[in-house]
Image (cartoon, rainbow, N blue to C red):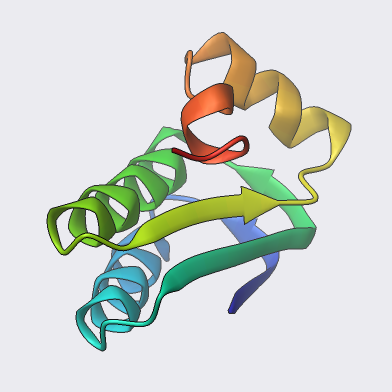
Length: 89
């Protein structure tokens, strides 16, 4: 499980992207991303989540995020990614 704390924006999204890809490449049965402590995410952070999901999927691994705050939930709905990232495949 990957826990994200604080804010994810253009300054740290590349690091999150790399962490999610690295975790997926260890080939766990599923990559779970805990968002309980995430207070803000911008489009680059959402892009990092999608990159992690795409890497996991390409390796046949499940990928889900859980416990998004109402703010994060709204952003995921607005981008059309809520069902893909939160509800999973």
